[in-house]
Amino acid sequence: RAADDLKGDFEARLDRSRRNRLARRAGVLAGVFLALGLTPWFGFARVAGNFRDSLWAARDALFPVLYEVHPPAGRHVHALGSAVPVQIAFASPGFREVTLVEQTGGQTRRHALAVDAAGRAEMVIASKVESEHLLHFEFGRRRSGEVHLIFSDRPVLENMQTELVYPAYTRLLPRNLEGVQERLFALAGTRVTLGFTFSKELAAAKLTWDDGEELPLEVVGRFASTAIVHSRARRAALQVQDVHGFSLAAPLEIDFQLQQDERPQVFLPNTLK
Image (cartoon, rainbow, N blue to C red; front, side, top):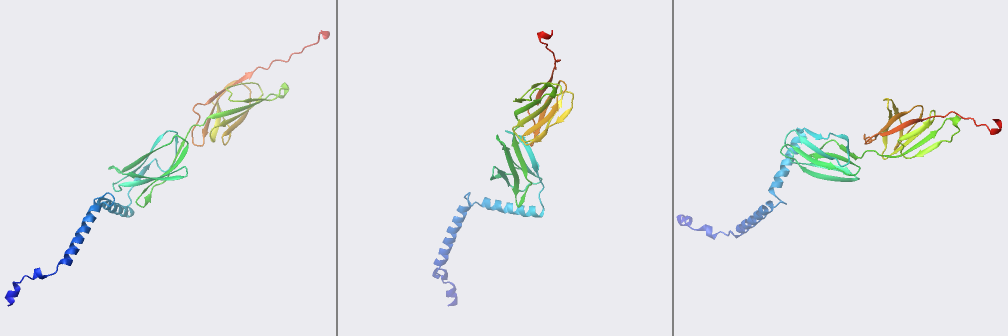
């Protein structure tokens, strides 16, 4: 009897329906998971990339990766229309992507930049209007130093005021000249006051005479002024430096010419001749 029991088909008598339902359900779930994994939104490649980035971030925390930013952290002034590449270069490969954070005009922009095979990421910053840009890179849990880019134009002379105060013996009234003067005539001993208005705030201004002597001007904001006593014919060149380090495209040449002082003449009435 025992031998006959061993020959019986007990497998066919077992109820496998519940197990089969669970197996089919597991198969469906596995298929859905695989289908989602193949999509770009839930891709396995993204999961692997995130794991790799986390691994590199942990490595960077323990063994910081050396890098170099160009231009280096600090203040850099460029002319309008200039294209300035801002770049980060890693000494060893690791990060696949970095973020360049840009603050300008009261707004903050975040730019995701891919790191190439050489370990570099770059973005070109340019502006056709005067503006300032604060930039830094973020990667892992680190951030680079701040790069301050300034785009500005050269200063322009907007106006010139000239006052001529003649010697007292001439009994002449002071004379005011408005506008840019490239040639001035005055008697010896005339006090010449010069005032200049520029398009930008200045850091320094000076007159350079034709003999090489320099006369610094007093600077207040966009204005520069000086006063001299006219004594001889000579030429001066005006040049300035604005707060961003730019100068005039060409210095203003001013000729100081000496006006001849004629001898006084006495006229007698005919009755005294």
